Every structure is written in structure tokens, then in C-alpha cells.
Length: 266
Length: 293
Image (cartoon, rainbow over all chains, first blue to last red; front, top):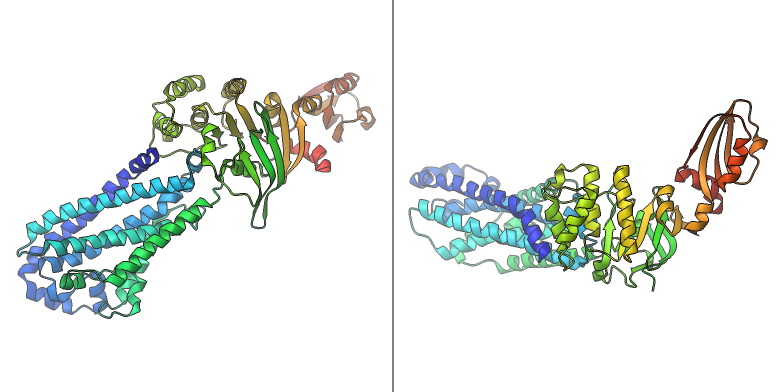
């Protein structure tokens, strides 16, 4: 419990900053909604001029861009990108922190097992991710209702927002796993930014309409917002693969961390 | 039961050498010195003992149990690393309280007492502390739960002489109360003052294990003399002299043995100047242990 509380305290500041940042991004986008909705036809023509890859990257689907939820799917694309960076950052730094800031000689000689340390740290990080998403959801619910000119389904809205949490969990787990292979990570951001953007652009290149195996390459393509809007459900295979990635990465990290040599400061 | 028990411990890092077949026992109430030049494997041995790194073969146990399988044995362990680093943005007191929270006993009074002895300001932020002051935090942090085994890895680096003095007094006091101390250093003089037994480690192997009393009979001195008239090599042709060098009227050598015998020899010479120093460990190793090891 003491480790959990300590970790929470250490993560508090960055979590607040990330939460504010993604809420601000969403707010900025949503502020443009009313002018776009008023000139729906012109906007659609403009977007049709873009190549499909660019539209995919921007999260645009032309059919329903001017409905509140349709517009919001574009917003969530960017929010998810930021959320993924936040989660990956958190994951990469979580267990490498003791080596990076050279506090391993403090924490790891305490009478606690490595597993207990991982438990406390994972729990704290997950708490922070949940807190981010809950706060974001609360803020964005208010904002969307404020700008929406027509009604929309609250259930679908929640489902779209849950993709943020799912993708964050995937990238968080990947981050933890990746950090296991470094003895000392000097800087977290290049690793997490590089990985997240690589997957993001890879995902954009995969054409969304086709349901071939390529979509499995990028977690960003696991949750197709237009599918969610049409069917009010997620696509089971991708949900399952996402869950498997999370479970396997975290389980492997437990095993590796428990057997890892913690080297002296150099 | 030995407090520390290291059996046939080998740790290799790929092709690089760590430590090879190390055997050691430290008994209850001892102050045990562990000495060797930098890079000899002292930290590797200690980190295996603490459960921070995994042995390639052999075993390391404290209080009869391995730290790796039984992390709870570290409850009675206090460790002071050679360099201390703590979390950013924490105050000294917060860190010490956090450390305390792992041991399930309230050590607030003990923290205050230790901080007073070490002259440490508990309200300061750790980031703002100098290297020496951070080290003091490390000392308090390592001793606050009154551990029964204290492991020190080059503890005096960064401490000024006055603090070193206080630190050694503190360790001696803990030892008197029953704590066993395992003390690694590369400064022989430091170890000589405190320890009852000493193990020498070189290139990953223990090359000698000696009682302090034996070591003290054989003190090592680097002696430089400058005479008014010429010195010959024959004058110092006695056991224990090595690395002998003459340059004009001055001579330079390391002496091992009873210092009275060498001083009598020196007294026969008409001197202009003399200096007698502690040789550093590298020199001792080079001229004595190199052959034996």
C-alpha cells in the first residue's frame, strides 16, 4: 500500500498535465463543430478532395462527418493518439524508473518482492490511466452536449470513448514490455513517441474498409469508430487480440522483471 | 548460524568477469572488511547478497536465507550504497518516512536522533542537497530501522573527515548493540581501524582472508627518505621492503612488517627529510598479493 501511494504521488503531476492537454485538444476541435455543421455540404466536398490515406489518418469518414458523433470520431482519433503516447510513456518509464533515476538501490533492497513492486506500480499506473479517462469522459460529455445541434446515442458515445482506454491499455502494456529489454533507459519520450507514431502511420496506410489481416498490425485500427456507430458494438476479433496483447505483455514483464539483474549505478 | 553465507558464488556477465567461486562466512557481531581495488567484484558480491543480481552459480544468503527467494529477510538489513540517489522533489523527511513504511515499526524518533548526529536538515528537498549531504540521508535511511545486518559499500566517499569520524562512531555503536557489519572499501586504512576480519578480493576472486590482528602486525607504509649523503640499496636489505627505488640522495619504497625494525634502520642515516604514508591498496596488491593471488 505504501508503494502504491508513493507511486500515485510520483505520477500525479504528469497525469494532470496529460488530462488537461487531451481535454484541451478535444475542446479545440469541438469548438469548430458548429461552423462545420452549418456548412455541411461545402465541407464534405472539401474532404472528398483528400486522398483516402490522409482522411484515414485524420480519422475522417465523410458519410457522417457533420453529425455530432460523426464529427466526434475525428476528435477521438487525435485524443487516442495523445492518450496512446501518454500510456506508452507511462509504461516505458514505470519499471525503468528505478534504474533511470538510480533509485533501485533504495527500493529493491526493501523487504518486498519484485512481484509486489510490480503490483504496486502497475496498480498506480492503471489508476492514473482510469482517472485520465474518467475525467476526459466527463469533460467531453459536457462539451459535446453543449455544441451538438441534434441528439445522439449516449451508449455509442460511451463506446467510442472506451476505445481510448482500450488503446491506452495496449500501449501501456507494450511500453512496460519494451522497457524490460533495456538495462537503463536514459530518455523515455523517444521510445514511446517513436513506437506510437510508427503504429499510427502504419495504421493509416492500411485501408480501413477491407477486413484483411493487415488491420491487426496497428492497434489504432482495432476499433473502427464507423463500425461502432453502425453496429453499436466492437469487432470481437480485434477486442480479443487487444486483450491478448495486454495480458501477454504484462505477464512476460512480471517474469522478466523478477529475474532481472539490477546493476550498479555507472 | 552465519549471518552472511556465500558459497561457491560465481557471477559472469557474458564474457566479462564478475566474480569467480567466492566463499565467505560472516559471523554474528563481526565487523567484516571486504577490500579490493575498484572493479575487483566487491559490488557484484554485495549486489548478489542483496538479491539485486542473480548468481550464475553458487548461492548467497543472509540470516540463512536467500534474498531472492525470501525478500522478507531484508527486513533486518540496512544497506548504504556508495552513491545515493533518491526520488526527485521529495523532502528528506518524506523519503525517510517512506523508507520507514517498509519496516512496520515507527522510527520517527530514531530518524530525528540520527539526523541530529549526522547534522542533517530534514526539511530540505533532496534535490537541493550536496553529494555529502545526500550521503547522510543514505546513512540515516540505512540505519533508521535498527537493522541487525549493516552492509556498507564504500560508505565514506563524499563525507568530510569529521562526518567520517561520526559515521564510524555510529557504526561502532550499532555493532556494540549487536549488529553485524559488512564493510566494503578500497581504502585499507579505513578497514584496518574497524574490522575484525578482512577478505581481499582481486579480479573476482578472494585471494586472502585475514584476521585484523595479523594485518596490524604487518602494517604497510610507503616511505620516502632524503639523506644528506648517499643511500645504498644494502642499507635496506631486509625483509618486507619492496618496490625499492633510489634517485640520487633519495629513496622510495614500500615496507611491510614491524615498523620498529625499519625505523631503527632509518635512524642510522643522517636524514634531510622523511615521509611515511599509507600506500594505496593498488600498491599493496601489486607488490604483495599479486604473487600470492
